[in-house]
Length: 151
Image 1 (cartoon, rainbow, N blue to C red):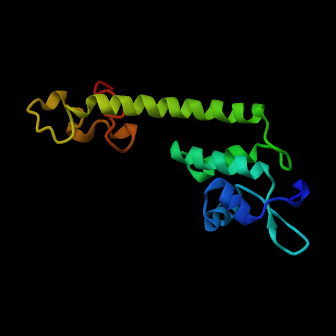
Image 2: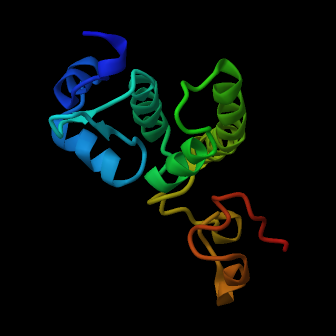
Image 3: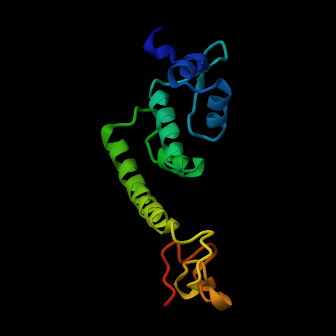
């Protein structure tokens, strides 16, 4: 296949491991933008292989499609993303991932002494919240999320 013919949706599915329906969904979400050949068939740029690979990896890290699309929308259309493009995106994602890792580590380290523990030391319990004093910080188990009881 000549490079200017683009990739068919089947070829893109085979190369990425995604179902054709998933590729169509990502297209509908604006993550990739195929063009039509003279016969009206979808054709994809080779750079879409990298874009879809990035989408799959970013989803595994917990990023939402709107977050992923926002990053991909910053890339100039019509050209293959460069190493510098990916470095910028990954730097932003790194900060979010570092925060998630910190939160997960804190939750893991406090797990033995909290949920379902039946402890008799309520003042030291990260779930104990008399008079809902931590509500102004937001919903959820705020103490486990890093807020302190001595606001």
